[in-house]
Length: 485
Image (cartoon, rainbow, N blue to C red; front, side, top):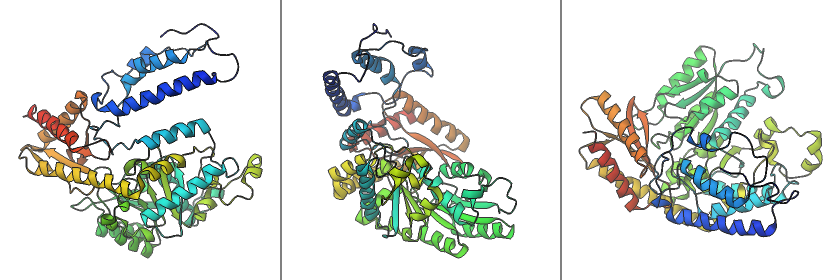
């Protein structure tokens, strides 16, 4: 990688407008070509760990480089290290949600480069965020008393929600903190054994302790067991602990299962616990009229998080936290330093008051463009097709004696297992099949554990994925399984 002679760009100011225009066109063409031909790329890199570090200079650049050379180095040294999440045969984690309108919005947002911390620093970013969040609230069928705020991921959304739960438990943590306060009880948070690890991380960050996140056993459909939840709460009360919150999951990471929210809400009301709903993945089903069942019990929640970057085709990252009476969130986090008092005065809402973050990206623009481009009907049609593909794949598993389903297929997630007489041998072979498939570069899956056993997991959600792509992946899975027979 060579550096160009000194003074390749003007000494002061940005690059010249004509140079920017030229490269904007080149980047736009590159992005369009990438999207159009992404299915021809291998998904996972062949580079070994550390290869990119070795290829790049260890010292920072002293002299300017021309953009032509930088782009060439991007393709030569960086692109080979990309895992192509937008590939139609990438079926790991949750489906890739990159979309054309989202890409365009990200480019515009980068050009505007506004900071959405207060209304005055960017009226449009503030008010568009309010509009987009209310559109989404209506699709989720949340009551009017719910308002939202945009963060990056559900991990951060959940942490903010639990911070409010902690404050409302009469602890005055905002002013007095936790240190040295012997009068504080030990708080307990209750989650399913299928819940996301972000709840544990929130407990760590909030000083509640990972140990105090109680993992409640799940039933045969991987939903939180209500009898086990009630027993845990009663036992904790008997030992002097303070039940603080229950996190109900709508669309668990491993299986897409949905906890019985209505029943959980009743227990929360009985024991005066905060109810947080983690609908980061599964909340998107609410835009389908036939999936209205997924919203049952939501109106009784104190907070709910949904990630439109998972099922609603908004490019990463975009997470929306809704709180019943958003002022509860503001009371915990508003803190206006002197240098921002003029910016914060008189506005209806300043989103910096609703979380730890001060600087905030103009994320609402990409959601606005995606929602308008597809509309609810278009979003629903695409989600519906992913559900159809999941059922087709589940049917192939049921019809093949070499495989078995490992969990009910509720959403666009299918958990399945290569059969072996010996469980330990089956664990080894299932893990090896996933490793073989991912190393091959034509498909990408995940493995997870259910009831202590290793299973394969396929996730659908990419709007580029067709039934033909699914057939291709099924063929690759079968070939990898044959190699283990």
